[in-house]
Image (cartoon, rainbow, N blue to C red; front, side, top):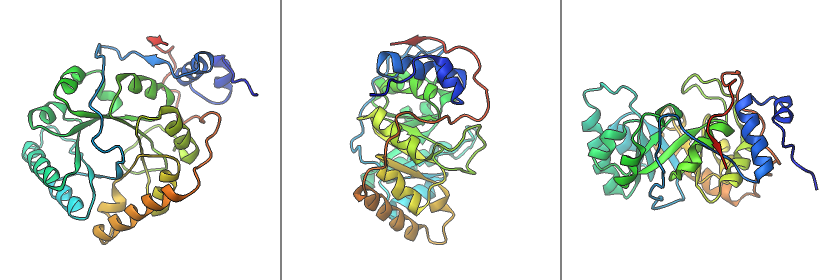
Length: 281
C-alpha cells in the first residue's frame, strides 16, 4: 500500500502552488479534504438539495430568449448568465426565464445576481469564487434557493464544499474561450478524481465541451455537463442539444474513467503564494 505524502513540500515538488500543496498535504494527513474559511463570511451553509441530481446536459446561455429556446429543445437544466448588473432588461429576463423553466419542469439557475434570484423566486443561483465573500449566503439558504459554486483547484473546492452547496462545478476541463483564466485545463483524470472525492455531492463539468468530451465527462461521473458555445454557436442548436444529450447517456454506459490517486496541478500562475487561511479539519 502506497502512503500519500503528508508534507506540503512533496506537493510543491509536483508543481502545486502553496495553497494547493497545503490542503492536499492536510488531506493526506487527516484522510479527507480540509475546510477553508472564507474571509468576511460566517455562513454555515446547508443549501437545499437538487430536485433532480441527474443534471444531465446543463445549458449556459445569456438571454431569456435562449433559455426558452434550449428548454424547447429538451434541456432541463439551464443557467442564465448576464454579467452586466446594470442591464436594464435583467430583471425582466429573469422573470421570463423563471416562468419558462417552471412550465418546462426545469431546474433554472441564475448566475451571480443572488439578490434578484431571491426576489424573483429563482430555483437556484450559481456563484463564482469571487462572489463567495460578498454574497449573503445565509439569505440564499433561508430563501430555499439551490446553490452551485465554481471551482478550479483544490483550495477552491476546500472553500466550497464545507458550505454544503447543491452542486460544485469543476473546470475548465478542457481549454475554453469563454473567459480568460489562469487555470490549466483539468482534463478527464482530474474530473474523475473530483467526482469520487466529492461524492455524493453532484459535480458539474464545464469548459470546452463538445459531443465526445461530453460523453467522456459523463464516464468520469459528472452529474451534469455544462455547455455554452457547442449549443449557442451551432448551426442548429436543437440538433446540437439532441447530440449532446445522447452523448451524456452514452457516456454513462461506458466503463468508468480511471481515477488517479491524486489530481495534478491546475494552476499555471503562482497567484496564491500565501499560507492557507482558516484551515480546519
